Structures are given as C-alpha cells and as structure tokens.
Image 1 (cartoon, rainbow, N blue to C red):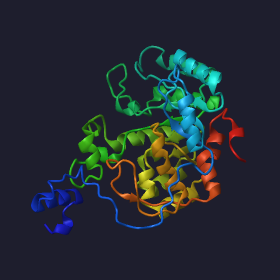
Image 2 (cartoon, one colour):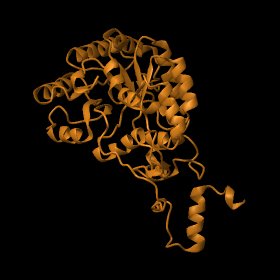
Image 3 (cartoon, helix red, strand yellow):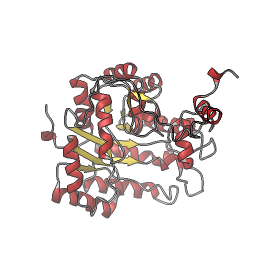
Image 4 (spheres, rainbow, N blue to C red):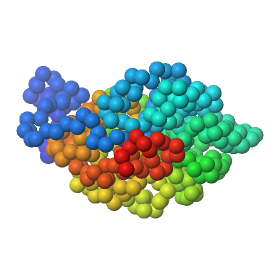
Length: 362
C-alpha cells in the first residue's frame, strides 16, 4: 500500500514506531501550528444572545448568581434550561427563577417515557405536560434516550415516531410551545472503529459511545423516525438539536429544511463542523437564516468564545477546544450583523413564548 493511502491515524502511529519520536501516540500528538496569520479572538458575543440549549441540572435549589455573572461576561441574555424536569421539580426551578432572575432563564419540561403501553399512559403524560406548561415551562426537551434507551411495556424499543406519543406532539402545537429534540448521535459512532473513522479518537477515549445497527438500532432507523415524526406533525415547531447530526452534510440538511418547514436547527456541539467549511456554511446560514438558533449544550463558559469566533470573525486556521471532537483547524464565517442577530436571539424570540424582549435590540 502506498504511503499516501495509509489513513492519517495509522501514519502517525507508524511514524512514531519507525523513527522513534519519543514513542508518541496519536492521542498525545497535538502540535502547535507555525502558521502566522491575523488572530481576532472573540471573547464576548457582538450581540446579546439566547442559548437555546443550556443545562442547569440543580436549578430547583442552586444559587444562580455565579451562572448569571458568567452569562454577563459572554453577553448571554437568556439561558434556556432544557433540564427542567416535571412536576414539583419544575415548579421549584420556575420559582427560583422568579425569586432571583425572572428574565434571565426559562425552563423546558421533560417527559419520562417509562411505561408507554400501560393503561392510560398517554393521557397521564399529556395531562402532566399541560400542567407543566401552566406552571411555567416554555417548551419540551426530548433526550436521545427516546429511540435509544426507552422500551415500551412489552420490552420493545420505543420508536421516536410511535403513534402512542402523537398526542404529546399535538399538545405542543395546541399550547404553542416548541419541542427541542436530540435524536441519536453522530453517524460515525455507528461506523467501523478503524483508521478511516473520523471520530476514532473520540471513540478510543470514550468507548461507551460506540454503537451498532443492533445497539439499539441503525443510525438511519433512528434519524428516520425523527423525520417521520416531524412530517406527521406539521403544526408543531421542532428544534433539531445539533443540526440533526447533518452539519457535516449541509446539502442533505438543506433538502430536509426544504421538506420540513416546521423544523428549526441549533448549533450546539457541532461548531467544529461549520468552522471547517466556512464558505459552504455561510451559504447555508444565508439561505436558512430564519431557522437557525444559537445553542451550546454543556455549560462551560470558557468554550463559548470558539462559537463566537466561528460565527463573527474571518479568522483562518484556529483550533477547536476539544481535540477528540475535532483535530482539524477552523475558519470564521464572518456572518453579517442581521444574520447574527437572527441566530443569536431573533429566531428564538419568535418561537419560544414568554422571553423578555427588552433584553435584546430591535
């Protein structure tokens, strides 16, 4: 086999073995670029923004002051806490917000899908969600455990588009609240674990993320169920988390956006995919500027500037903050102000009820 055909990972390992470069491994290989180009790090977002994909798991009882202080340094106007849970825990989170920072947080409710198929499960779930909205929830967050982990009362994998769940999505449309749903994971987690897999390092360091067509089902099956649910409920607004895992294939995502006008996308955890294709990604943002929302996912304030830099700057060849997610360099999209405003806050203000508009410019 010609050296040019040896996968990059194997080439690095081979080089270290043959030439004895301190026996360095690919996991440790993380060279500093010698490229000298203008650098314009963006520590604070140009406009106040809404993080549509936030998580504060202890919100019922936590002191929110340190969180707000960090939000202020980033220019984050509102955090949507997707871990609102349900019932009494949701009520306590809403009360904590009202007592201390009534305009800086909102919560989405969650549903426990255990027991689907038992008597009156659907009616109880719908009634509880309706109560959660009355108690302050501004939307519904669905975790990837639907389609991946949950089983019905007969022990069968619970499909995302199971007809017994249809009344839930219909109730969201009736109440005028969006559904933010995370389905499956990156397709590479289902691919062969070898030198051709772009997520090799992530799977090496996080082996529990590896999946197969029977663990619990194929990627295509799970993602297809999600799209089928979107089609069945055209009056429900769905926010597809992580760009539906199609940020590395914006052509296919464009086709889905055209086919599913009720589907929005958010950019949590996939900014590295956008940053390595700046011209293509910018065209996508231009075309679908009214349906893209800012999201981050994990609450690590030090990681937000990478997102700002990709969206706002025209910098070249700068690193991502997690090598195991992306060992490649990124480039800025240099989005115009009007698109930035839509991504940062205008689109969220339009589809999430009850947000404080006074925090954001016209």
